[in-house]
Length: 409
Image (cartoon, rainbow, N blue to C red; front, side, top):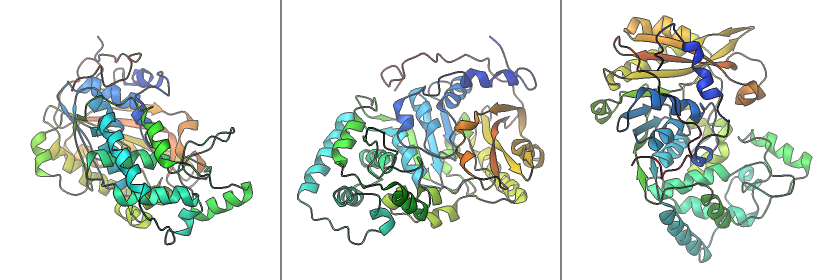
């Protein structure tokens, strides 16, 4: 087997996950779309390479929970945190996965409760009401009032609903979501959506939310018994890590920190945040978003210091950091983080792996050229807290059927 050390063979790694079908992976990965997510193939490769079954892994910018799910599928203990409440719900749904039976039982309870409830939608925001028929909105408002994100079953249902709140419709007229046919998988500004509805003469579809949720559940390939691999919590990565996590000493931290003011996670998730009872502007205020390189480096300095307290002495940290456009040039942000932050902190650098992403897969392609725009190159900055070698690579079996039945508990 080949051993990949600093400067030797790193350029050969990306094809190991990029050559795999884009649609590879468990159906839970597509539970809800999310910005700037690394592919499950990448997470699978590194979990398989740098950890063993039973090891703990941690993602402090967990997003939609890609690492969390792959760690769960491969029998690792999975810890995830994020400052975005949307990300926390999506990640928790993939680390504390209820059985299909428990989910169907809860859905029946909600459906029966709705049948006798009196729902008022008069006070719902106009920009929400324009997306849904009155009958559909009444069902959503009922579910919004009844589901508790602190409960594992309810949290999973919330995550499923978030993924269906808006979607594009098929030419046949079939709908994959509850709303009018949206121009993108994320939510453009309310004014833009209102104009889109008017220009295309769209009518709000009347759908049965409960029936659509039951149909969706049948396509998710869930385990027969509840699967709990770890925990997820709301946390700002610049804040000190919880003491219990420090005691856990994860063997690998694998994460993609925010780039330089590329995405406003709250602004473009205003529909989903409505369902969560959150204000988009408040969410964006909590998240790192600055076009200033110095501020970004200061942010990464605090984050990396905190992670140094968490990772095992014989463990690994991998930052996935994309290049960004600065004027007419591309900035290798990963190299800047190493040169200006991590080197001085005493980390051991195994290498920086360039991973070129097909342009059509970059969500940020819709934005005009501006400062902070993401490019088609991600770089994987692979570190250890102390000098050590890398294990031999055992290539994953990409053709394996991705089910819970063939993974360890």
